Amino acid sequence: MELIDYSKSLNVVSLKFNFNDPPFDAIEFSHNITRYMYDKNAITISAPQVGEFYNIIAMRGSPENFVCFNPRIVMLSDEQIVLEESSVSYPGLIVKIKRPRHIKVRFSTPNGEVRTETFTGMTARIFQHSMDFLNGEEFYRKANLYHRSLALSKLVKQKKK
Image (cartoon, rainbow, N blue to C red; front, side):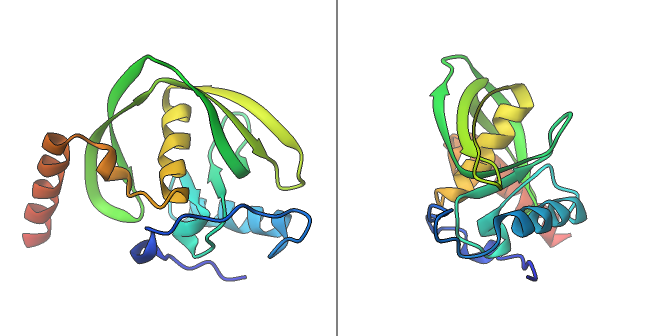
């Protein structure tokens, strides 16, 4: 399977991956999407970003990388933090976004095992960023109007140079 960057069609809500009738080999795909993530020097990548509109994300982790099938956030902390985010699908766009600092998530591994994890800090942010793509949402639209306008203005100025 060849992975292709489909960043122009990211407003599609992804489908649940069916382990009982899989559209493709989950383990092979997990290797491919992880390789693609590293090739793009990204810290996370979602299946829609490579043309597969299924609920799958890959993200770097320590001590292990995560490839999450059918991920969902089951708890969001009340504590929020504003940080800059960017994406390989929107080169040069850096925008401040407020997100919960801690989340609890549930997902299946490539072999179908269900896991529940609690993520905090950057890992929580990365996971939420990838979930935006699965939900057909452009991450920068999570920013307030001021930060979004500022980031888009900077991007336009960069492209004019």
